[in-house]
Length: 231
Image (cartoon, rainbow, N blue to C red; front, side, top):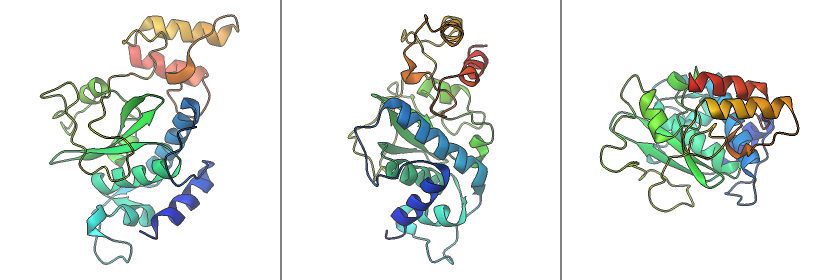
């Protein structure tokens, strides 16, 4: 649609995210996480859960009303997920969409790993579903929207809506943000190592998946989020 790129460019400019208009494979994982986080928080502040209507000129039933949601900040889960996809793709990130009969959300690639991110306002109000693994998003799902995934294979994700993704097939979301020592689990050992790295420059960590807040830096905010995650 001729409306998508100009709207994405305007929104990204407002929140300090560089506009590329397509997937940019030269972005670092820190740049990707920062962009994903800033866009996620923008949607959290501005989106209102609302049924879209055909009365608005930007409504298009063929793309699940993504343009309508970008323009009006109104939409249900599917249009909200698609709006997040549009913005992520415009910021250079590879994306895809997951959906079931009752819900839709977004998949985003950080580094070499895929994560679930749910931009629907019922989730962003507490930032529960930002860069989550399949196990994590299922565990925190109080409404059962995400529980269908993993019923067959570990990541049985329905992604036929993914019109912007450079990825082929079904992304596997097993990595967990906060897995500092890359052992496949997030626990007190990761939190302790992050804390020590913040206290002393002699302790270094792999920061690829340490920016839990998605603000572009690894600091005590991320440590507190990690502490809350392992409790």
